Length: 343
Image 1 (cartoon, one colour):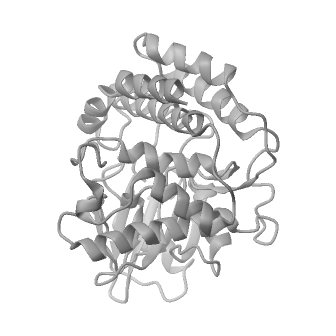
Image 2 (cartoon, rainbow, N blue to C red):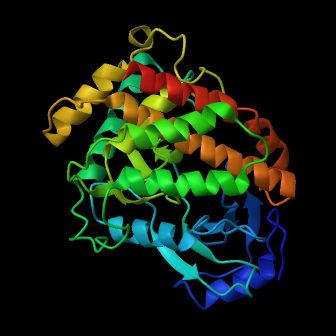
């Protein structure tokens, strides 16, 4: 057993999985993915095929965070729908195997675009990939949660009220310094929360291009990844999350489109992307989009603050990166206030 998030006991993992996954046999080679901050993720190479193992980090964790069991459940439920996901193989809830809960899924042989600008592809391909992002997002929100057994996947009631309450508590639990902009943002989100319009769908919670795998030579999405923040709730949270990301700088840290002429590189504007989504879902224009955008800046601030706290406590998957990300806490909080002001 190991408590190290950077390594796995390969022989122990191989012996355990050989009894749990049909056709699984060692020896295995283990490689840790260096991207991501929340749940340490490993590539398992076996003589027959490759798998991915995703685990909870060890140590004291925030309540309901790092829910790899929920990730396993939602991706299992989506198999066979229009939402592409990796094949799930096994969920291990026994902490004694590697030190924390984990699950194993297929490794996807595809291409991951870390930047939405996709500098290494041409305009036609770039536009097609962004349109596929739009299609998959609309398909996700059109999944019938009753039919796939996820009607109880999230609590009933006003999604934003629930989420704002949850992330406010988690932010306070991880708070390291006072950030006045975040205090104001949390207060104003409660004051300006729209009335519940009755929409309740599956939401991903962190929908962006670098959480997707695409064909090597085409725009088709092969799998949506990183479902830790998924729940049932309001679909505009996911849509606004895409728009939030795109407002960031067009570099590896921001992963956005800020300062880019989008038509020149073949991708839609925010308004065009939103309109295409609404058309696919057969709904009208979205009112008060600034609230949904501000909500996403607020939630991202909470996530980043949690990453910073884990880094300072020595529990982060990538501590140096976690401390760097922590510098953006006031930046995201101020961006949320700006979104509210614009409406």
